[in-house]
Length: 152
Length: 152
Image (cartoon, rainbow over all chains, first blue to last red):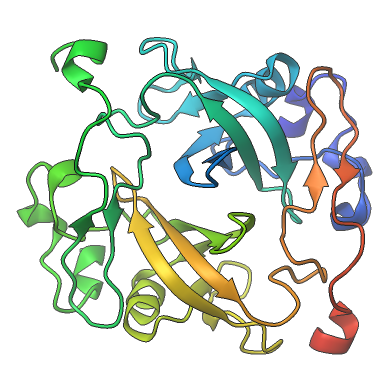
């Protein structure tokens, strides 16, 4: 069972009525991941949506720093390990069916997005008609991704 | 191609440099879904995390009401169709790699969660130690789910 990776936690099989339980028993998907939404603790802005495996979840809880699992690199990932743009976790919530967590963070450095913006959600989808053309809501970059991550 | 389901939109194959493009070209997963984070437009609280297929995305944009795709029921789902707790969409953003959207909504009625809470994220994960026991941050129900959805 994947839940057994959460060392020290009771496994899902022991859980009844999970929605009303105090038992942490994340519903990992077929790849062993749950979704994580990360918002700015001050502004409420959604900074990013990423994924966590059991190790990332446990490290985030224990260290109060945001850890994720990179699906493209297939590896555990401490947010800001390269850029220095770490995230201090102010609070963490889990949803009713325990397949998503919500982090409220203090974003250190210039931004959360690898493109150089503060948030990954820098483009607006206009409403009320179809088809649509996206609008940049944060066209200014908060940092230069080439300087931070190097040339690609 | 799944993107072709977005009638009237140019397909992903035509997109270069998608992160800096105004082209809407969602990166649907193997089930044809993208992740949707929905926050309260006033408070910034995360109300729910759900999924959208191409039809749900298009209907949400066109009608300014939140539509999702229910993975458990395998069907398109207008939020609040049964409970009356609909969501008026104030703004919609899409992230850098276009596999997640963010809705800011006015939540009508008592709440977004089928358990009777305003938000699905009604339990806190305490930080700093491991293992953990969840803490209810919204123990009071905003509505009675049995009265709204019927007995299960």
